[in-house]
Image 1 (cartoon, one colour):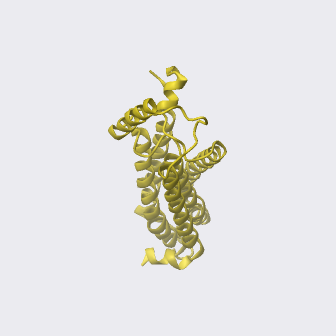
Image 2 (cartoon, rainbow, N blue to C red):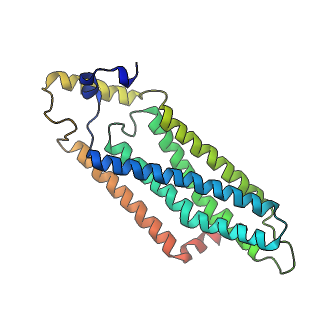
Image 3 (spheres, rainbow, N blue to C red):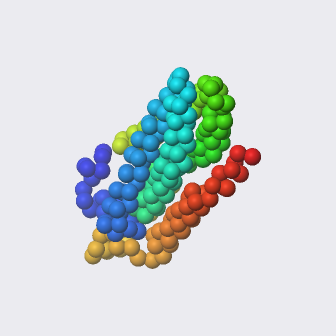
Length: 242
């Protein structure tokens, strides 16, 4: 039975309380979708440039491709990935879905973590080294990134597959609730039977959801600070290349 077939009273009883107002929830969702779509689009552009850099015969075209890849990775893909991860975490902890209550949410979060970590290694090691090799090629010779060129094409292809898998999870929401989610559902049903319905749906009382939201905002703030620090200090990038 889908949620559309469940009576309103039962949905009210089974749904976890939301820690965000409807307006804030829509804002976070819009930001998350925008960043996720931007992430996919930027990776697709990166893939095209990596193919051009690998197969190109003109030296200026190859140099331009790897320089553009480095800029897109550092100033578009990395910020978009971190923003997507942060807003996704905020949405999971601040809405009825929860982070650990549904398998699809948990699987998507794990994919986002793995993709972000791999992206950091990819950007600050592989991409930067490939750009250095190409730009450092002697004048009059055909610049080449060597095996790194093939690796960049494979990495970008794999990244698109992972991101499309995350989109598929968001659309189809498979596998239902986790065991923890089922226990929470039973607890909410039992509590609903013992207490009268709340006059305003979605109003949060107690310290649980608000504390969860505060913790999420702290995590988001830390991620933003770290991203700003990395992007504003070129010396940080050089540490990965030593």
